[in-house]
Length: 170
Image (cartoon, rainbow, N blue to C red; front, side, top):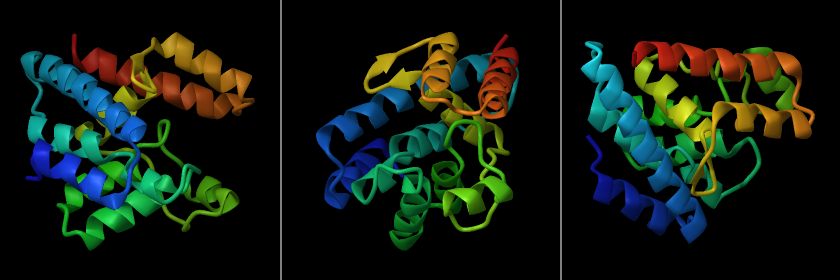
């Protein structure tokens, strides 16, 4: 599995800015905390996979800050020989996922971007709870989305993911 040091080195070598790297570190810290709670509740979760995926989730921001950063990060990771499970976390981390139809509308390759594996869901949820390097509540994230006029069905999808992940840790 890609180590923390290897992931950070990849972010640096790819040209990610220091603020993106610090964001990735904070998301990874929170994602691992969430994963540890879920593991303590008796669920099987791969902590190393969560950390590697969370550290690299925004690696595509070295190429674009648009929504396509998930696809760019996936391409970068696969090109660098990163484990397929980590690359899938990168691809599926946006909000609470994107449908094939939404991807097409957004100009992304027509694919299903919903987080499926537990580790993918944890990273997507943790990313929703970090703005820059600051942790925020799910209510604050939903309010930020409403201020950006994100459609209500997408907001509800993020809320549902949060509820699912939180339920697993109790």
